[in-house]
Image (cartoon, rainbow, N blue to C red; front, top):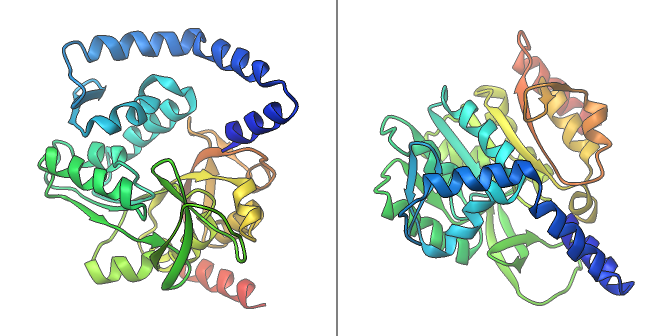
Length: 302
């Protein structure tokens, strides 16, 4: 999202060549080149319908997923760190809730070779959901449950805008092309219906994080899952929320924040981020979730 905005500004100023130079320099980052060399080594002989995203993790895929999955392998250093952090977190987890699954790389990785675990993959986009279902089938993963819905603070319908294979929530009164209306459910209700008890969650919903988390208070209070969050400050503001509200909600439920390497982050540091960021959140040791939930509810009511 930030890169698209930068490009639009530079184009308006007739300085798009600067973006091209920046993108070219980023492609030659030695860390990225090392990851590309490893990726090429892992994928020797792999066709367009298969990809090795990490050693020992070979996935059968729809060819349309290959480039998107490559972003978690070498194309983006930040997305590589996110996926590495996820791989560390998933090792001790048994129930994974993937909100904003897109083509499903996280759910596929979680369930691959682990028949005793369960993943619930939520994706509202018809295009991405079709590819997600295909990828699940290609890998014979009966332990991945796909659902084509958006996660929100209450059940209903939501107008969303198609951006590539993603959908982005639209603000009240916002107009634009490529809009669709999708069903919304709370994560609490969906998990109750499926008797699903997540111990790990990923939230990547293109700026709709506050609403998704508001609809997951019960899960966060009862099951205390660790969270992998992608936060979109600009989109949050456009949709009437803020990073500060996300921080207040999670801290009120006894959660603390960490960067992808596991270093602690204060709530203030998170609340003041201006660009998209990926981080971890985990319940503080010794926190009473019932008391925390009551305090958060009281603060919300006031």
